Amino acid sequence: QLQLVESGGGLVQTGESLRLSCAASGFTLDYVVIGWFRQAPGKEREGVASISRSGVTTDYADSVKGRFTISKDNAKNTVYLQMNSLEREDTAIYYCASRAGAKATVRESLYDYWGQGIRVTSSP
Image 1 (cartoon, rainbow, N blue to C red):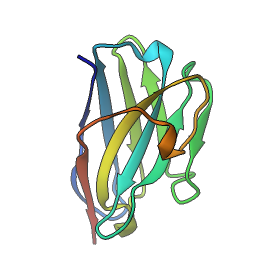
Image 2: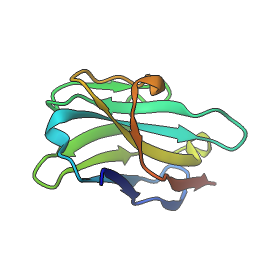
Image 3: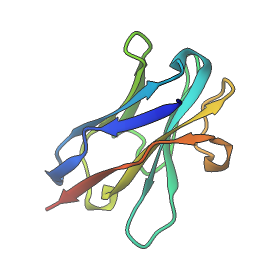
Image 4: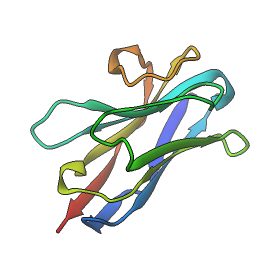
């Protein structure tokens, strides 16, 4: 069974950091693109970051560039999202998702499998 499981969320103060993990089971990350998305209260889901199948290239939303870093560890079959300098506006449910292909993209419609999501709250 194909599955993506997010972990690492929680409550932090603004300016602090969190690292989210997305662990895959039932398939290997060597052959897919992984993206992180988020949905804030009262807003539509938006793309945050993506990493190519090779792990060489990445794509970020403008709102997180310079603060968030996506990476993957094929040996652990896990993708990470390092989030630094968290702002109140980063508060959301964060989802990881996978898509067939090679190119990193934060276009949500291109993704096939989704995790259940994990809550991140950044508060002053």
